Image 1 (tube, rainbow, N blue to C red):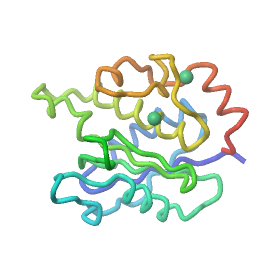
Image 2 (cartoon, rainbow, N blue to C red; image 1 turned 45 degrees about the horizontal axis):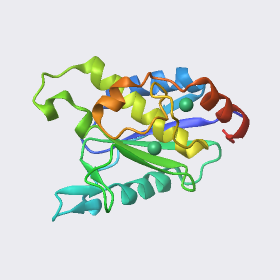
Image 3 (spheres, protein in one colour; image 1 turned 90 degrees about the horizontal axis):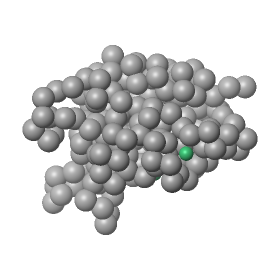
Image 4 (spheres, rainbow, N blue to C red; image 1 turned 120 degrees about the horizontal axis):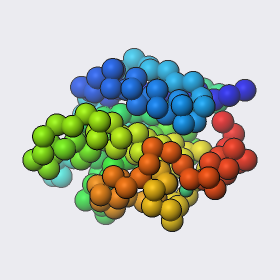
Length: 180
Ligand SMILES: [Zn+2]
Ligand SMILES: [Zn+2]
């Protein structure tokens, strides 16, 4: 049985945006994508000292939302800025055990850096980060190929070098090892 990618808009993220990400992810992975009802703004994860949101608690909620549904993988998409302890920020976080992940659009938006809005660029970045975290949930570690979605993004220019897909060896590992 083939798996399903369940995308959950969090807070103010538009369903239409999620559907567009979902369509590309569906093509890359050859899996069905569903858009689930949105989740409220993650106030439970807010850290007032940092003014950011703790990604790990959000991933846990995304995991609960898909509730260990068989062959399902949960993708939360939020606009709030995420952090993990010891890191200034994260673009996203994945948890293999929960089969869930979250990505943040906050630092993918050209407007965050004072540039004009650019939907196509924003979409490419969101897809690259979503595929990256999905790769972690499925079985993959970081890849040395800088055009592969599994390359580690330290900065946004790393993200911009990635293609919206996995390299052949990563793709092959998903095929062989991922129970999905
Ligand atoms: Zn990673
Ligand atoms: Zn790769």
